[in-house]
Image 1: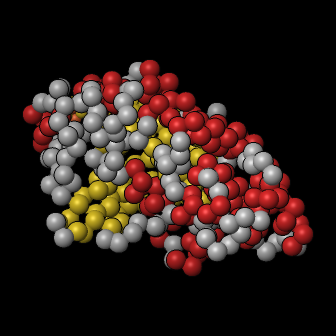
Image 2: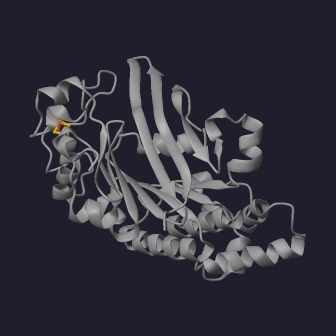
Length: 324
Ligand code: SF4
């Protein structure tokens, strides 16, 4: 059975207008996220994965500008909606976002329970909202939920605050949950707990997740499908087994060689460094670092080629596999 597409990003181009010049951050990205899947968007800092996530909510911050492209969600282009409609229908409703620093993302002057009750909306009476808030806090494995509901965000540890944040996101029963580096700021011992909680809840609530991370090992453990971004381009997309077990793009192969590494910006397996996107390399943006680069790689941007079912790669090495 063909999976149902929930979000479709087409030809997305985003630039940032900085004092150094125009940063060509997103270079015509295409991506489909299917209903019910745990999709991981992975790449180094500055590759454009977080900006792509923000674009889904039309939340690209100044000096960033979405130049062209579309984000189709349930038949409508979010980028063509007016701000009122996005607030009414999409942001914090159909699509919610979990941030890297939960304590900063929570409202400091509202008690944790009141924030969750607020997210539940006005459809419930106060007593129903209170009951549902406690249920949600239990669902995210918070011990003593009544006590936590009466506390303020600053009284929580990072791990507990992230659980409150997840409870708040679940309150709206979103169709898509975007989790941008949700565990990076947490202790290593808590990271795995939060990820498996997220995985479990998503299955139970039949939601779809877009997990944005620099950590390929996190993706390997939690995701169904993976998109690998490099310097504003989508290099490779496939099922997690294909990406981890049979990576085809030279950049993904390099990333795989770099695991395990604690230094996200010092990839052991890849020579050279991430390019400055004010003056990105011509053609394939990976060419200065690629051991297979040929003349055409410097001249033309590679098309996306399907190399096997559900597996696409943007690289000239697979030109011969086009259409077959
Ligand atoms: Fe390397 Fe060329 Fe493929 Fe780019 S298109 S990854 S430079 S072989």
